[in-house]
Length: 209
Image 1 (cartoon, rainbow, N blue to C red):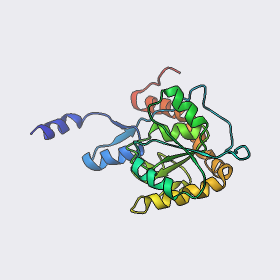
Image 2 (cartoon, helix red, strand yellow):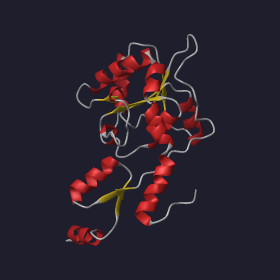
Image 3 (cartoon, rainbow, N blue to C red):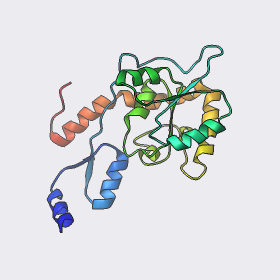
């Protein structure tokens, strides 16, 4: 009896979701209209790099990843990637250390399930890393993560092999793939204004600027 009562009480509420993926999930499960109320990414002083993906002569590219997001699959990817790479796990770091790590990374690889618009992939892209995502959860949603199709890795039994193949192609032309994500970075740069507009539309006023 608790679940029906609880759902009746929520029926008159304003339902909001941080991502289009979550919006679809709530709407499908409860049949309720759901408004988008996203968030925005703020970079540290160490980030916001204007680098274009180019490396110094002889420098190996750095691939950052979060071991909590598909870490077991990434271990297999590491064995399959043909090119020399410095792998950088984002773990046990302060926010400032995370910012500095992403700012010196060429690629950010996320092969886990994204329940929403996770911060790390967005922060990595704004820091100048080419962001590669598995098409799982919000990672498969083009509204939440409008990266080029070539940067979205199909989910399935060949995930590690497909991820290694995509990563090898990106590492062969990092500046070109960095340029291909210009639209994604522009969208991320406008997240704060989007958030303010969503707050105004839902609640009638925006947050302090």
